[in-house]
Amino acid sequence: MNPRPTASDYLRLVGRIRAARPDIALSGDFIVGFPGETDADFEATLRLIEEVGYAQAFSFKYSPRPGTPGASLEDQVAEPVKTERLYRLQALLRAQQDSFGQTRVGMAFDVLLEKPGRHAGQMVGRSPWLQPVVVDETDMEIGDIVRVRITSAGPNSLMARIETSEAA
Image 1 (cartoon, rainbow, N blue to C red):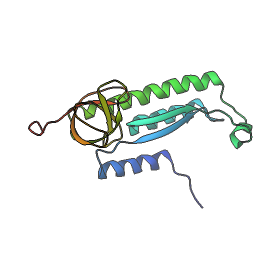
Image 2: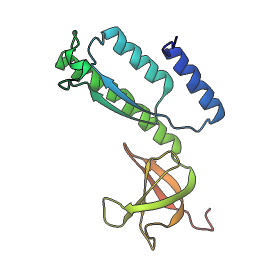
Image 3: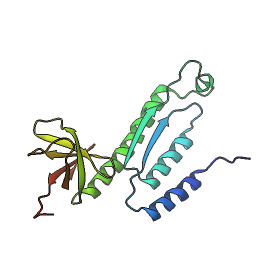
Image 4: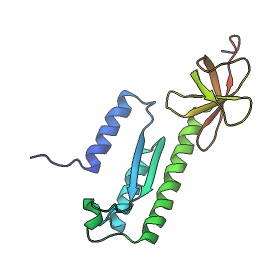
């Protein structure tokens, strides 16, 4: 016998992880509209996501692929329903991601600069929670490790300033 884990099992595991590492950033992948997904199933998913609180997530609408088991299942979810569910899910996930980013504002930590930023004069590294951290470039190069202080959080990245040795 191999019983399937339940939402309660998952929440207990998340609780144990957070007890060991309160600063953990959880990420997840979610698909809405799998055949047979009911309104109640979707609402239960939203409640679980609300309770967990994700720092980052990827979300998609289910789309049948020829030859896969899901493609031949009955109870395919209508496209407009999948679209509406995805919008609701993404709004919740975006709010959680924004909230997590806001909790990083004011923090200082080291960042390995990985690449130029989107705009001239910027460099990008990653936070310990894998969020992009954008800093204004001075005399830095890719591969440098710099101490930064987060000044603001955007929808998908953190903005930071370089901490000088006397400010750190």
